Length: 299
Image (tube, rainbow, N blue to C red; front, side):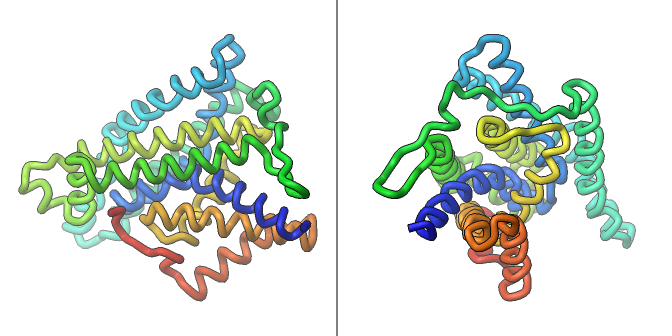
């Protein structure tokens, strides 16, 4: 029964990882860049929701505020920071130094991560914080000998719902199809009247909206500090790689695999849970570098 309980907890933990990784997978699938500021932005969402709750807003209303704020932030950052950096990719290709050009978006996101981490430390200090949930974080359901946390269960349901909604948006809306066309061939899409820069910004806005939601759930489930974003980025990146770069359902699968590896590893040795997840990540890279469900473009 202990092993079954570890498995259930692993699936629930995987839901949190998948929710965190959804935006990272979407940005890579559309623009082929890895946002190194992903983790600290999730922490920023947690701090923003914490401030709103401390000001008297109900938690659900704080979430309603955080998600559109982050969508707007994502659109602005893409137009103001990442699009100019992406333009360097084309310029590098024309000048014969494409590798240097492809580093530009990565370096920009790294700069954002460093600056934002330090800004959060100045404003909030290095002390750990947690979003108050009025008992939700400690509530549980007893199913025989199994214990299921209410908050992790809600997180898993939200993760599946968000991934399904984003997948449907990409597959069945005009904006989603335009986004996929830009991901396939930005030049050809531009010839058909699609504005790649706008589509990139819309994709980032959607990714940041999911990231803001994920950050709130992280803040509710665990203690966080300005430096916690590094760990968030690591787990989200591992979930994306295990599942397959650019595959949203693969990201869900990757999050669950990572969560199972950590909880089962902790069942074997309480100090080796995170290590077990890293070893599974390494094994997937060696055996199946493309991930469990590889897909270069969400469809």
